[in-house]
Structure formats: C-alpha cells, structure tokens
Image (cartoon, rainbow, N blue to C red; front, side, top):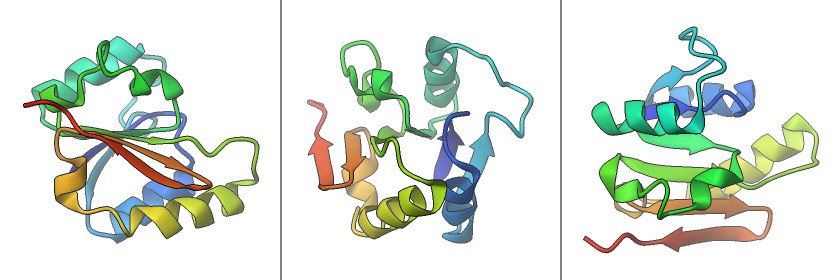
Length: 120
C-alpha cells in the first residue's frame, strides 16, 4: 500500500508501517515539512496514496473526501508517550483490512477503530 505519512506521525509508527511492507513516503523525509493540509491531501489524491496522520482535521470528510485519495487513517491517540501510542496504534491497525481503508476514513483511538465509509 502506498502511504503518505503526515509530519505529525511519530517516527516509530512510520517504521512500523514500513516493516509491514508498505511503500511509505514521509513528509519529513521528503523535505516537504510545513506544507498545508490541503497540499498533503492534493498530493495523496494525485498519487493515490493513503494519508496516515494524527491531525484530526483530516476527519472532516467534506473538506478531505477519502474517496478521492487512497483513504485516510487518523490516529487520535493523544497525550501519551510515544511507545504507548505505538502500542495502541499497532493493536488496532493490524485488525484493519485494506478494503476498510480504501477510499474510507478510518479513525484509531485508544478505545478502538471506527470506519466512516464513503458513498461511492
């Protein structure tokens, strides 16, 4: 899966996604730090990438329709140490199927996963 990792995503989560075999483009690693949310979304749409972020703005489906890109995964795991955040992310991410991500909004919280499906 082609993933566009937003710059607020913790590095251990990016490493985990790569370990799973995903083709991950990190905003930090690609010299795109500081681009706007709209620019993140536009690039993901052009290249059909899944956006993975901790930015809750991406939960706004009318502003950022996940059906136009590869999908959007928002990790709403805040105010926790990096290792605990990674543990929670791993716990729930591994249960998500590719078809649940494709064109949809997936929200990971400490309590579980919510999938908001796009109308196609």
